[in-house]
Length: 318
Image (tube, rainbow, N blue to C red):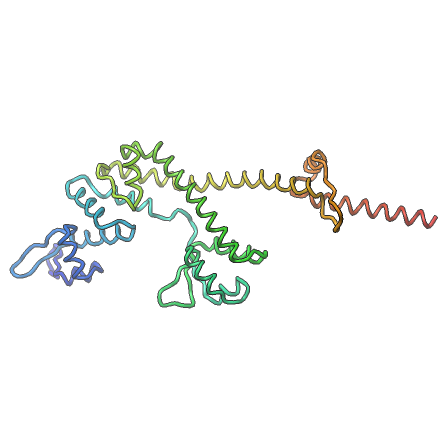
């Protein structure tokens, strides 16, 4: 590399600094992704602009963009429409949507948390679901993207839920949550991002890495949209948390009422359980709270039985 103020690279030096191979750099040139180098005698000379372009391409590839959509982005930038804001928007959308940090777990620790035995089938399914990720070259260690999710699975297993039921429930839950996320994105696209991106189709293309980025998106609009993503990022989880808490409170109470109304407190085996009137259940709820109804009815029943036993014993003694 030259000692001039403006850095110059041979193609081998450019490959070394960028992490790309010489073959890849030439392929990018052939596809128009990389500006042609300056020809100096029999050598090609590359500059920092080529290095920066290679790093931008690598970043966009990591984020899921195709080479075709990257080419369109770079052509828009070269035409003077700006790419800085778009890249900022891409970074915001692809950034972490949770404060939770990934962790690692050894195979021995994993076995200990799930019954103390090795279950290759369960591990394979956990990797398929993304609960665990294999680490290249480390057969006995896994990456845990969400330690909280793994902890929930371990607690359910300890409570007696089979692993197959846990993974089946996760698959069902994931589909429902992805539907909620999709609806939230459609909602915010229609009512928020349309002002920056023109219309629904353009907005979807701009925030979905599987689609080509809408080239009418200006640098300033993309910067504003990125700032809006930062503001809206926590809202989806906050809304779901609040609604889940509300639903659990309502449905858990109904669930308890239904079971108490149908069977009453735990009874010894017999021909038929005794049902509690709904007004009795409501009165007990007001007295001790919904979460303590079963314990209160059980204690009251035991107290009544003890009183009758003592009365019978006193009568016999008399």
